[in-house]
Length: 270
Image (cartoon, rainbow, N blue to C red; front, side):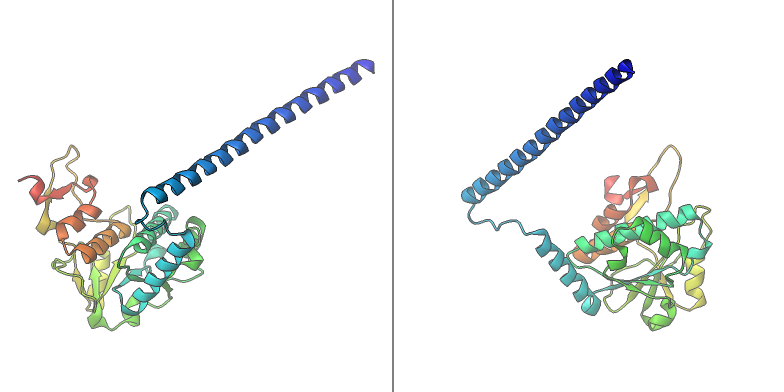
């Protein structure tokens, strides 16, 4: 009985020492953070004194308000982009997860753009697997500043204003027209079914266009002999957004077409 008591006493002593050690470690971390914040505050103060003409950094609240203002302005006067999600029921769970990630990256790029698009997710039902996947993967998805509708994009806008962007189109996109509504097919298809979005556009007699990859880029020799003009929706968006700001297709294509697609700009090989 005495032995058990001694063992318990020793255990309590060791546990107390462990608690004290953790407490000292935590106090060191807190002190280091305070010191770092103080140094950063002094650095910013010194920087403002040395550069009085430079505006102070905007607060996060101000930047969020500015982003919200730009996005709401795009709803009334900006270019419009639809993500056609009516084909999502054909996709596997893995493909839906990839699509949800692409939507997140697209929205993130749009928030950062000087001239954002107004985005509309069409054919998008709140009881669908893609909606659940977007909620699961994308923090704050329910508060995204965009339109969500169960309606199909073909019934939502006049057909003559629509341009379906698909790599299977014969027509290269020459410019971004603010009077048009551009559609991206929300389709991640690892089996690479041919012409799904192109055939859907033809069914509704809607104009189609492809990105001018063939006009400004050439195939680059690679070990796998792989060349593809099929891009993720966020990559297509990055190209459209960059072109809208620069009106320069080579610069825009360089932004969205990765080297892994097997294409490089023409002037890169001249």
